[in-house]
Image (cartoon, rainbow, N blue to C red; front, side, top):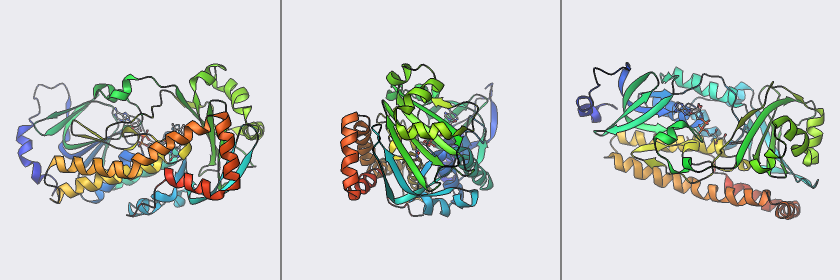
Length: 399
Ligand SMILES: Cc1cc2nc3c(=O)[nH]c(=O)nc-3n(C[C@H](O)[C@H](O)[C@H](O)COP(=O)(O)OP(=O)(O)OC[C@H]3O[C@@H](n4cnc5c(N)ncnc54)[C@H](O)[C@@H]3O)c2cc1C
């Protein structure tokens, strides 16, 4: 059903016979997705489930570790189940409580309103990729270099081939070379944020807990993943990080600013040979549609990691754009513009406020006095913490 609307495009988008590129068999796909992380793979599975043909480019191979806190909000569970994914079959840990600590030693533990689960990106991305392949998504392991919109369809050029598609969803994450080609504004501004992650082995960690500990210039999350390892992942301002010059030194002298992190690191054993790191993490606003390209997941906007909601937002945004594309192919939306407007509106409705509250909370948590006051207030009023969490999370996403 998906190609009929665009049949005329086939002849309008001839492939250059002298092109040095290998022509893909799927010369015109209904949807091309760039980036096979959570947003890209979820959209691919959703669309394939609705019998829409999808080609997805991912520059890396699966499985692969990624810098991420690996705590996922339960709001995505009903939707993931509708896509045939059961994370608990793959060992995900159920998380009910949040333990929060301040560098001054104050701590508190409270039940999370919705709760969540712990699973590594190594396992989760692979699980989704396998499901996508099972649904006949064509996954191409290659890096996309450019996207051109010509005669109402797209030409997507990767290192090794080019293909044509009627719709493009860019789900290439926080930052990619592609953002330069697409001339996205945020890419021209430097940001001071660095993300660092590694897995540890520890016998003393409660698997049903997610911990969040602040320290001078940043904060660190701890939670257990499917194989019993503890994921330690932190965000730090480069000004503080530079004082110690290396990850090892920062772990020894910067993180241990917080007594809870100090005692964790004293008894935990590293499970990774090396920590993973990323820099230039941008929390700037980004357009969700540009030159008819849709953006989903972090490519559309990244919430501050302390909220523990980026993965749920990536999955949810994939659902939103997929639904609008399905409405186009079943003729409910009559034009490309209608799809674009509907997606923009829904994205803003679901996520704009969450991003705003995330910014405010990060500012407070990084301010030594304000964060101490906040922890005092929360200790006296569990209701307040629940309200804060609610502002940065969504409701369970229906199938
Ligand atoms: C320090 C830190 C801690 C975090 N902790 C949490 C947490 O505990 N809970 C939570 O919910 N969220 C957390 N997040 C946020 C979460 O990691 C992201 O929101 C989530 O990974 C977004 O998924 P995505 O699919 O948009 O992007 P990604 O998972 O980054 O996927 C993008 C994919 O695109 C591919 N790609 C990029 N460019 C190209 C190209 N040109 N061609 C082909 N492929 C390409 C990449 O290889 C990658 O696989 C954290 C973020 C940070 C920085």
